[in-house]
Length: 136
Image (cartoon, rainbow, N blue to C red):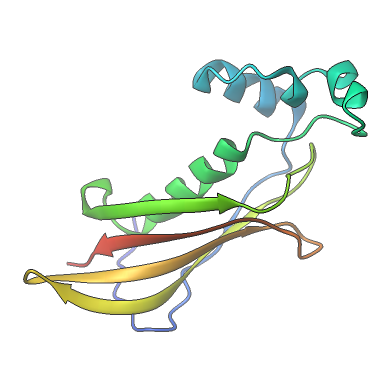
């Protein structure tokens, strides 16, 4: 874990994810209990008018969670929310980022509000969110 001593505008080191494989999707389906076939069955995806399967939105949210816990210990996480904006295709390479939007004192605790984003190399934003973390 790195030391995170931010100021407003600070960008955390991005978390670059390896391309999302079919194996990753199958393993995440098992781990999460989300066995929606559109994420793992090519025939189902094609019957829905898609070219291929695509990643679970919650997988991208999990990657963002990893970025957050790389910044601060889990017990310092005060809130975390996301909005799904676009799909992540199989073989997509997401990059997770966090930027400090505000630093406040709440009940004597110094907290940072982070703007979160997951984007693909072509610039497609797949997830937007925010988190509040307590600072040391």
